[in-house]
Picture (cartoon, rainbow, N blue to C red):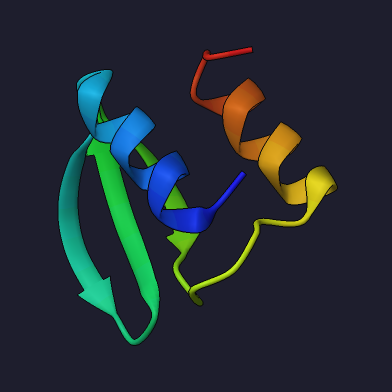
Length: 58
């Protein structure tokens, strides 16, 4: 999955961009924080699964 597609998916599911630090987007929802790297390429499988699990999308 492309990094921008992952970011769009999270934003559609209620996550809000709290701040941007370099090439990383820090998202927040209900007091929970998640960092999404946006480097213009695919997110590695292990990191993608970790982000999806911790955000409740998997």
